[in-house]
Length: 187
Length: 321
Image 1 (cartoon, each protein chain N blue to C red):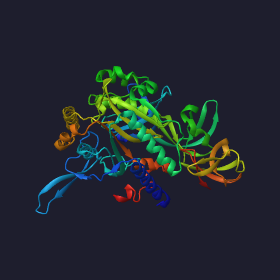
Image 2 (cartoon, one colour):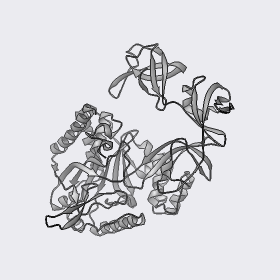
Image 3 (cartoon, rainbow over the protein chains, first blue to last red):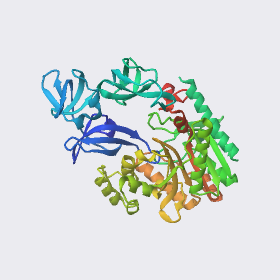
Image 4 (cartoon, rainbow over the protein chains, first blue to last red):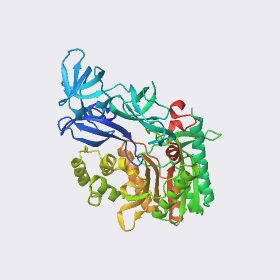
């Protein structure tokens, strides 16, 4: 048995309804209440996502997961296909299971995959990745103010749209945070 | 270290003070170090030892809020008062929205009820934000009762659950929340509330109000429905900024609630200490009043866009310990 304090992104909780992958989590202390861990979890069978909140003093069951190094090969109707870097086995993951992260995958790149009894659960991308800006309008239209800085929307390889500072030009390389989708700096 | 952010926090503190001064409130410097701090089941005071010159020892604790002292000042005859200073809470997460030492403004006004308390709070936030240069729109902040919020976001009929642990446990099971023997009614309520309601509250600035009575130890009961108490919290964005009450002035009822809180602390394996009798003695003389504790640092986060308190504190918590 484990404590909700052991909850992290990527761990798998087992309960009477099956296995649940933790997609997001946050410690909460409402001041006028006990300490809790709020999670967003995804059922590994049905793909259903929901929010569950655990009191830090309760016990929960976490299942063992394996971490494997994978190379991304291609995307087709069955989803994303990867190759195990040790066994050279090929593994596919459905679009839903990969989710938003799919847009950052590039042919041949290596990622970490979490599996349970050989079944792929989630992938972990490098937190910062470099992309070439393929489309950037000159500053004026579509500018927005965010946190006191003027930004504009640029498009990088793979068709991903990122809010970047006005000085970023087409053809430049920028670093993007793959967890938040935010611009980090010029590469 | 970002000097601009530190300067911005000072500016927010200055504006909050100016608002209350101009509105005719008297600033009081109530004690930070006291013998009998608040005994809320989930707030942990920081204890110390105070010694007199002859060695006589006293236990002392840093306040978690100036509430007891402020109410005694109301009982002594003050009408409109505020206290802006550090408060201290132990065992809280150092997660960017909490610091064990944080700035709180707590104010009290005699003769006002819950709706006036919310109006005053909204007026203060809007005035400070406007002076700071980040005005809110003129739209009034939303007022949402806990009952309506539970219905709107979680499709739960709170009325039928109040005081019924088995009923709230059943609701938890339906909402895929765990239920354990040790869970109190409040714990089970929080599992649904924190999962499905709280994350959505701050989408527009919102006063959540009228709480189940078990969750408002220092508030007066709602005269139209005694299962609820006159308490409000302000949510803006992902931050909870304030927590206030129409104050309970019935010393007998207050003693009963304090004893229940002590009982809960004991059942959680936590330390208890004597009830503050001077506070209870003053309570009936306090008169009808409302008060609210408001996180000044969190308001500064909101106005500066700081993602963590550490950006605003002269010495962030991780650099102090």
